[in-house]
Length: 206
Image (tube, rainbow, N blue to C red; front, top):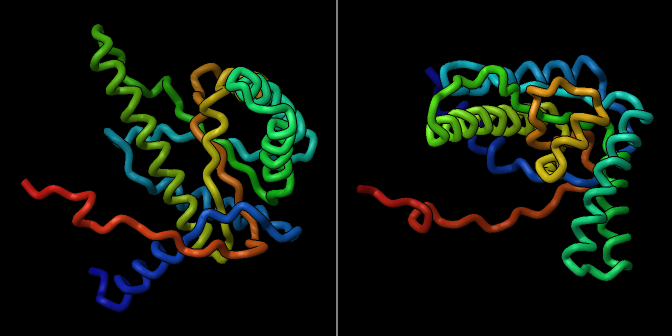
């Protein structure tokens, strides 16, 4: 049983978490990263398949190769959108520096080999989506665990736009589908709280 004091602490933890994009140049110990990843493995998943796979980008060389590969497609997409060259350079450089300057970068993947195989596309699509939900819940748990440990973090969706490139540059198994990139580190600043929609606005009781 969780008492009211612990419940309040949990609510405070959830409500005080922010998406931190700027970090201090301070290393995060590998043991601490491991503990955060271990917490993430306690997230719920359909059929308890635990479909999440974590790829920690440890070396500067790996990060640079990852960023440069992802930047190529990002630039191509912006060009196709008709974005002015100057804005493209700013956007690509901002994303590049954000990843390279973070003390920890973790690529979250879905292991599709754990998905059941169905004869119809409707159920197959639902099976894939269940796996995606499991990875997302692991990512959310990871961010809360990092926050509880005094770290900041942010979820980046960039790998969704170039999953093949991410798999290729990191030499990942074909079954591992990149879903997101989480950056972790000691916050350089704490973003202000953004307003949330009222429960009445997003809920229907039937």
